Length: 165
Image 1 (cartoon, rainbow, N blue to C red):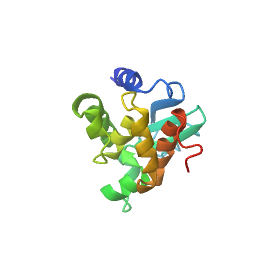
Image 2 (image 1 turned 45 degrees about the vertical axis):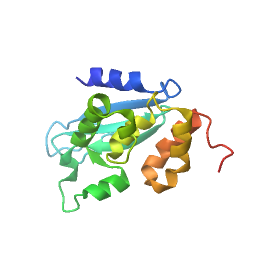
Image 3 (image 1 turned 120 degrees about the horizontal axis):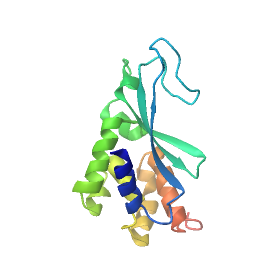
């Protein structure tokens, strides 16, 4: 299932970012609930399992976008607005956003701020042109900081904004 979805996501990605941007689901599980994480890269602490969705840029910078709700089992569970502002979502949010992006919404609707994850996927879409990217880049400061990184990445790929600031 993920391999087909990942292929569809990459097929829609602008050629200028293919190879630079990688979508990655990671699953980690300690042997027992009382043991520390299975690997040193694992983000979960003493849980039975955890899933993560991250975006890797240029094979260096890993940006965590989502993890399973096991990670949030605490009194500090974020509200929907806090998730939007901080850019931390649940796996269910990511799968719904991918479904909306790939199967339901047209690209213009994806670029509305109704769903920040759909917006993120649409930023990398090959169907949006240079003028649209330029408008998004000029309006980037009205968006949360976590999404500004991705807006700048797309603008850089289109050679927008180097001398425009």
